[in-house]
Length: 403
Image (cartoon, rainbow, N blue to C red):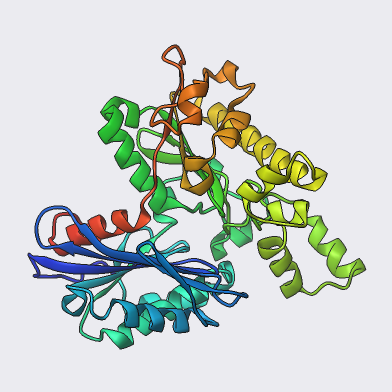
């Protein structure tokens, strides 16, 4: 088991810096935590790291920047927040780490053994883990006296039933950690917390499907507050059609393209994670907003939107079957929170699951978008991974929780 024996005596936590690295992005925030719940004092994001035209957003302002990798992006972030109140009095730096592998099932302090294990795990998720490790090392160098914490996206799914996590490949690979892990766990944790506050304990313990639909997209079935199945698998590439990722794909396609098209393994990895999904089908954009605007006049854009909605509907129905029915559906993340047409197209035809949308509430991005007569309640809830991280680490530092 991972080492969780590190003790902290800090009782009042002045500020926490959260770092949320994506494959080509870096979100950051500072939370004042000395009194009550964490309060966000500054937040921002660097987008398109290593791609053309990267930008830095701090609050509502935005400007172009030059960054080639996550280390350069973090250096720019630290420069930006250096004068922020509380930035020089950090009690912790907390990182979203996408993949915890079989060992790390809890949010916990970073130590040398963890970094070594994450290095070993890097081939599990080469799109995210190397950047996550780089960010931790850079923050350790920048703040040598400040404890670093890792919050694992896979931790929410740690209790998946064996039938859900076991992959249908030779059993020897399970011993090497090859299994379904599931991701977007920090978002799921936040959304379940918000559901409980909004609808009560009974709703939060019912049969829930979370639809986290953003550039990365996944769905998770939750019962009694625990993940029982999820669409992403060994890596975040599996499951739903996404902005640039394929989602589920015939595995023999890799062998075909490598053998017949002479594609390298790295080229295939890049294709399924950066050139596919909405972008691959449309050949024009990975942004759902662009595709919806173009669908009337561009058959490729229409195909991309159709594929996304059809695929999401199919997975939603499958997860409802796992749950034995559906009490609550939560839409979240960029597409899920803001796009009424996509929500309506996913839910259309699922009346047999008890889903009846209220078109007016849906078009207004209401908090509840289902009819009062709907057997399943459909919520729209804004996700906030950074706030969840700040809450979790504040509690750890105050010794209020142990995991």
